[in-house]
Length: 633
Image (cartoon, rainbow, N blue to C red; front, top):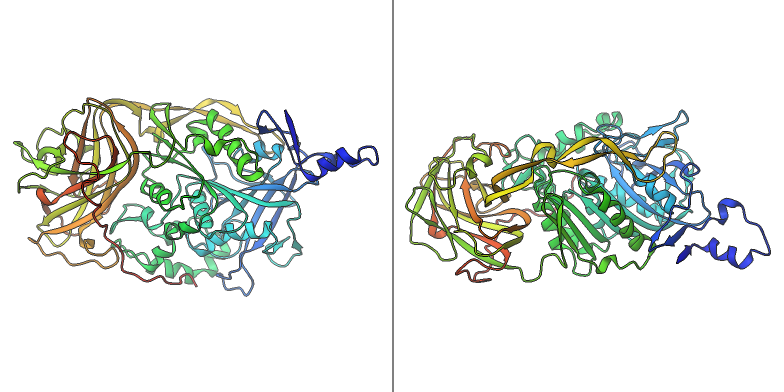
């Protein structure tokens, strides 16, 4: 069955005997066959233009509103069309996608190259594609504020413009006004990493017209990209240092005040401040009305998995959602599951931007890569039957090695020394032997599969020998398995190509294929977390530790959806500095763990022998004690 959409299509049917419309005007906005929109528009004939949209701020202080450059490609039709938006700081610098594509323009400044496949595939099917340069980057004016209100306004203002609520111009300064008379007002936002993060920031404003977002490996709280429960990540720098690699000349010369506020709001000790609070989209997730399709890698140590878990948990129950979780690191689904990704995304946009009742919202919400290229679907997230179970480390006959039990063991302690150079690989190795650098506790071989799904929390009662101490903790699946390896973040790029959409001069639709990189291992980290013990009472106000005094702190482990197979063991490892991820405390300590007062709370389906589902309420996480503040001017 073929369905045609759009006002002009209806008029053509009624008036075909009375008048002849121009060929371009006779084209419907979209045609549906076999349940999906079909490629009926010529990409070569598509309209290409740049509009600079006023975002309602003047952070660069030049006396005029900051404007974001929005490069648009849309079907040459008289019908109104919906818009797919990717807002990014990367279009003129590192580029987008596995092949680092950048925007390009002809001699008149008309956009030629639109990175990624979205224009090639969706414009012929009746969608416009709009690629926004963040404020302060590329051809936009204003300032970069790394996850802040200017960045969010870069996306929100364009959606407002598409709906007649903001002003667009034909130039970065001056110019004539431009109206989006061709737009239905319905918009989607999509993007990976920083691009995906702003989709969540814009959605958290509740802006009218945003119908769906597709955040891929996206940050939901910028604190959780740079910091973790009081400890700073090694090599991640500050919001100021991150922005410096993407600022254009105008931002470099005019945005010192914005940079100063970001720098002062990101103390090196990892404390939570009002600056971080402004960049926490989870706090405003209750405003979200757009459907959410979240895609993530369980091995992503760039955008740590706690980000997607806390975002989905904070969404209103009424928000339609979908979740893909791969074994990869920081990788786009186009490069780990391309043949399924493109048609799934196609149906998702058809449903939420065009109102096509294809039933995708009634299909399983969750798709998880359990084995290499082996996917398992679940009806909902979190899965039905998930309950928090509390497990305790219990001392064994070998020093620093014991069991992980549903029952609290006798009063005992176990100690390790943080030498500042330990790694997760070294911490989880040889779990049956003593190590001076960590302690490890594990169950016996499981009698049945155990699914862990959600964000776990660990409460550690520990006594440091110095006035500074950092902690790391890991849930581990002990048992032989073949999975994607860390090489290439789980993929390798091949020499072959596959094509997704139409080509046109300067913008082809063909991309190099990929294949998994794999390894056979005897232990895999399920979830991990890091903390600064000085923040045991507050994330925003550290306390000076007293050597020889016991402190208790609860901190988060990363979000996961993992099945520990029958015959494997579930382990808990507690250690000090993770030299691959976190900074080192100024005075390295010996740490003594009080086992009877230490426990981990794990959301799981099924139970371990003797475990009592839901037997204890979740321990309270350490919270910041800051008040919301206005920042960045």
